[in-house]
Amino acid sequence: MTRITFSFVTAALLAAGTAQAGTQTFDLTIKDHRFQPEAVTIPAGEKVKLMVHNQDATPEEFESYELNREKIIPGNSKAVIFIGPLEPGEYPFFGEFNQATAQGHVIAE
Image 1 (cartoon, rainbow, N blue to C red):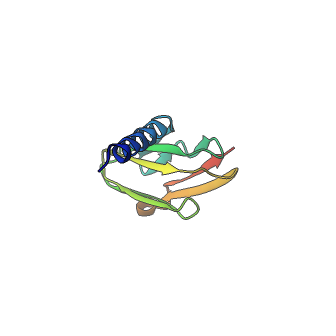
Image 2: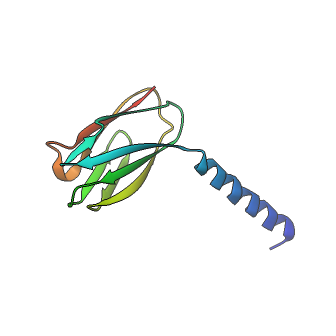
């Protein structure tokens, strides 16, 4: 690998890390098989990070067809889910394992 290529790769990796570091984080909690808060408002047109805290002893699957995301979050653990950038609007999500109670939506504005 030449010095120029190595420098370019290093600069690209540093830029990517800096971009991730500037991403806004929004907290979402699963407790008693419900998402809290049920509505998460995020800025439209920006990539954001959802930090999902599962406080239940059982796993839950965050799922959204509109956000094109699904992720299993084991009991008593956390998971990161990146979403966006989104057009203004509402994007529903649900807990696959407790659909009757685990419902919510992201509002991009």
